[in-house]
Image 1 (spheres, rainbow, N blue to C red):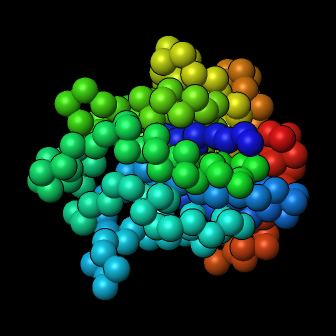
Image 2: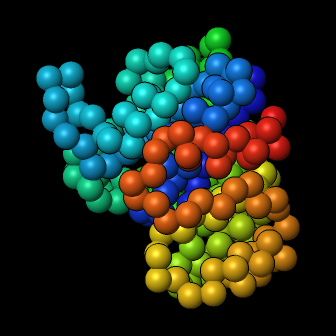
Amino acid sequence: MHGFFVTGTDTGIGKTRVTAGLLEAFARDRRKTVGMKPVASGAAATHEGLRNDDALALQAAASERRPYALVNPYCFAPAVAPHLAALEAGVEISLDVIREAYAGLCQGADTVLVEGVGGWQVPLGPALEVPDLARELDLPVILVVGMRLGCLNHALLTARAIAADGLSLAGWVANAVDPAFERPEANVATLEAELHAPLLARLPHAPGASTEALVEALLPACRRLA
């Protein structure tokens, strides 16, 4: 079994899109896949409890069925920073709980993808941050770069922080989030030269694109990561 921790240069830059697409692409490559969103804020109340759209997307994209409680052990209703949502709910996010859920997800799986929350340095509690999750689960990192103005600074700072936290950057995905972004080719070339990690895929700005197109774009990435 092997796995990866998917993070991003910011919130709302396509982590879930990439993670779900990779889950389906790995499954296309005959791997048993599961996804995990350890912490999520912004959820709707259902008869089964709180449900977060990103976590549901990962649960649906995986080839192996897993209970929602394992996919998303910490789910909070308000769409605010997770440490604030946890504080308001009177909950302390525990690495022990996340580790146990991860162990349950891994049983019978070939590939596990764990999606972070927000960007790399997001706090989860008084002494807990997103990097602690990746370290605890011992996972190399995939960085989703939202291609827009400011992406060079955000991507290079994030890559530097990942290295400083003692984690390996397995590769990065250039995800076009701004159709008006100028000089995209030059920006990608700059990041290829500076990030010192493989460019796994370039995803166009295509809000209405089919899942099939996304999976096809990510299949080479899966084979490179395998």
